[in-house]
Amino acid sequence: MQRLLLVLLGLGASVAITRHALSTDLLDQYLPLKAAPEHHKTLLENGFVLVLDVSIPPGATVPAHLHPWPAVFITLEPAHLIFRNLSGDVVREVHPPAEPFGGPKVEWREPDTEPASVTNVGTNQQRALRVELKFLAR
Image (cartoon, rainbow, N blue to C red):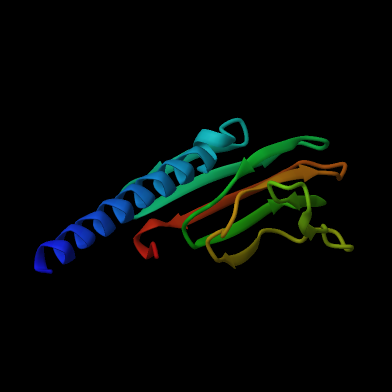
């Protein structure tokens, strides 16, 4: 009986480790610097933070990606953005302010829960800095 229990525990641990490795591999392919490097440029990276310069020209679609860490998001130039999940469903829409933009807008962003593509449907470029707080990984 003890031998059977040990075998089952060993199999369970093996499956858990394999599932974790697969989920990590899937996560890696959707990281912004891998999935959408033409729209994300690294300004600083260390074990604690990743600072990205984000740029989305009018009419451009950023390939599906996700940001796994919480972040401070600083909008430098706003744009009209449509976010779509992997099935193509609209999951979020961001409109630029109706009044003239008065300078950087700072927001808190929770980690993404699923990959999404982003399309700039506006007439001006989206520019932002994203300070991802890797030390707050969940």
